[in-house]
Image 1 (cartoon, rainbow, N blue to C red):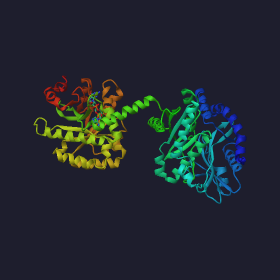
Image 2 (image 1 turned 135 degrees about the horizontal axis):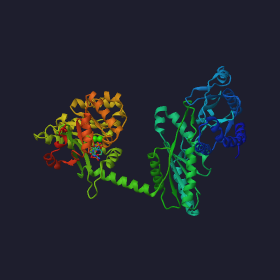
Image 3 (image 1 turned 120 degrees about the horizontal axis):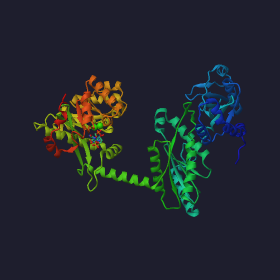
Image 4 (image 1 turned 90 degrees about the vertical axis):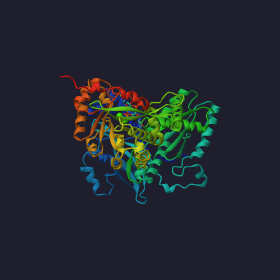
Length: 617
Ligand code: C2E
Ligand code: CA
Ligand code: CA
C-alpha cells in the first residue's frame, strides 16, 4: 500500500538531490573556511560524511547567521502542517527559536548570538499540535558547513512519533509482540529463526543473527525515568525498521536488546560476512543522530554494541546461535562498546578456557590449592619490618596460575569474597603464630584487599570477627588498598576506613602514582603508608622523570607524616638512590622474593644488612 507523499517528503526528495551536490563540494568548503584541514583530513571528513549517508541538506544562504536562522524557519514552516506549532530546541532542551506567534521569536531571529558550530547538532525541531501537546513529528537539525558563504543545514533525522495510546493491541498480538515497540517478541523470534534456518537449508545460503544491545541504557533509564527509556527504545525500534529490508526480522528480546535476522546473504561465508558487516555498520550508524525524546523534551545520544553469528542450514541449534551472538556481543562490549563483533572459534575457545578456570577456582579453597607467599619489607637499616602476603594458586595437575590472571576473574565472578576472607584468615593465623616467636612478634603482615571485598557491606564485621577468632593483634595487620578502590566512593570509603582504623588495623595505599594521585583526597584519607608503584622504581636510576616523581612523592609523604615503601627494588643502584631520597622502607627481589612460610627460617638466617652499610666517604 502506498501513501500519498506528504509535503515534507516531497520537499525532502527535492532537496536530496541538492544534498549530493553539497556533499561533493563540502571538502573544498571545509578547507576554504577552516583553512587547517590537510588533504588526508579532508578525505576522512568526506568519507565520514558519505558514510553517514546524508539524505537531506536543507538550506543555504549568503547573508550570515541571521539569514540562516530565518531560512531555517522558512524550511521548518514548509514542513509544518496546518494547526501545528514549531519550535527549535538546543541539545539541552532550551528554546532556540520559540513557536510562531511568540513575541520572542523575532527577537531570537534577529539578535541571537551565533549559535551554530560546524558539524554540530543545532538542536531539535519539534512540531506539535494544539490539541495534543505530544510531539507528533520531530527532526534533529545540524549544521553541515559553509559553501562560499552559503550555509548548509541538514536534517539529520526525521521521524513521526506515534502517540502511544493510538496503539491498540489485540490479544493475539500480545502473545507474539512486544507491547512497547510492537516488534516480534522472543516467542515469535524463535519461530522466525526456525523458518530462517529451514530456508537456509533449502537455499544453501547463509543467514545472519545480529544481537544488538544499547550501551549504558540502564543509566539513562534509572536516572531519567522509564518514560524516557521507553521512548528511546521506541526510537531505536523505528530506526531499525527504517534501516533493514522489509522481509528481515527485527525482534525485541526485552530490556534494551534487539535481534535482527538477515536472510539470503549468499553461499560463501566471506561474502555473507562482508554483507553482514555492511548492514551492521549501517545499524550502528542509526545512532549517529541523537534521539529526540518527548517525555523530557530533550535530545539524547545513544550507541549500541552488536554481536553477530552466521548460520547456514540447521547445523547449529537456535539456542547455540543465540549464545554465539551473545558471546560476540560480550566481546563488543568488552572492547569498549559502540562496536560490532562476529562470533569466531577463538572466541569460543577463550570463553571455554575462562569458564574452566572459573569452575576450577570455585573449588580452589576447598581443595587447598591456594597458598600465601610472604615477601619481606625492610627498613633503612636493613631490619625486617614484616611482609606482604601475596596469593598463589596451584591447581592440582596444572601449572600455577599467576595472580594477575586469576584475581581479576575472582573479582568478576564474586569469588574474591570467599578467597579474600581466606587470605585475611590465613594472614591473621600467621600473625598469631609469629606472636609466640620472640624474633617475629613485632613483624606485621600487609594484605591486599580488592575493590569488591572492601565495598562489601559486611567487610568490617568479617574483619572484626577474624581478628577476634584468631586472637591476632590488629596493629600488626595492614590493609593495602589501591587508589581506584578508595576513589569509587570516597566518602563511603573514608567512613569505612575510619571504622577499621578503630579496630587498630593500619592502611597502605598501593600502586601509588599509577592512578589519579590527587593530593586533595590524599590528605583526607586515614592512611598510614604509601607504596610507590614499581613502575617508577624500575628506571629510577636512569630516567630523570621517574626519579623526579619519586623524589616528589617521598617529600609529599614525609610532609603528610606517612610511611613510604618503595616496591620492586631489584638493584643496589635503585636502593641507593631511594636511600638518598629519604625513603625508609623497601620491598623487592633484591631484599627477598615472595616465598612460602616454610622458606622463612632459611631466609632469616641470610643477612641483607650489607646492602645498608653506610657508604664510605
Ligand atoms: P601488588 O599488590 O602490587 O603486589 C606486588 C607484586 O610485585 C607481586 O606480584 C610481587 O611478586 C611483585 N614484586 C615484588 N617485588 C618485585 C620486584 O622486585 N620485581 C618485580 N618485577 N616484581 C616484584 P604478584 O605476587 O604476582 O601479585 C600481583 C598482584 O596480584 C598484586 O600486585 C596484587 O594486586 C594482586 N594480589 C596478590 N595477592 C593478592 C591477594 O591476596 N588479594 C588481592 N586482592 N590481590 C592480590
Ligand atoms: Ca600490594
Ligand atoms: Ca603494589
